[in-house]
Length: 108
Image 1 (cartoon, rainbow, N blue to C red):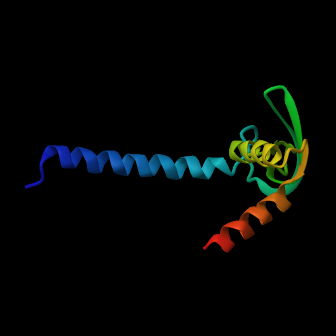
Image 2: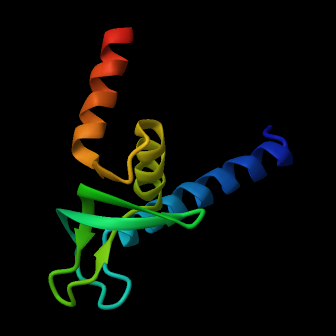
C-alpha cells in the first residue's frame, strides 16, 4: 500500500513536469503573434548600475512575422559579467564565450 504523502508527491511531480514542458514550448514562440522564433546573432546594449554595456555577436531569437527580438535574461547578465571582468564597456559576446569555454576545458 502506498501512503498518501507519496501519492501527493508523485502527483505534484507529474504536474510540475507538465508545466515545465508547456513553458518550454512557449519559450520558443513569439509572445505577440505566437509564431516560432528563429535563432540569430545581434548586438545589444545592457544598462546596469547606470553604465551602458555594448555587446556584439549576441545570441537571440527573432520572430519572422513581427520582427520582435528576444534576448534571454541570463545572456544579458553574462554581458555585464564579461564586461566588468574585462573592464570594458564594449565586448564581443561570442569571443567571451569561446574564451570561457577554453578556460574551463584547460582546468579539466
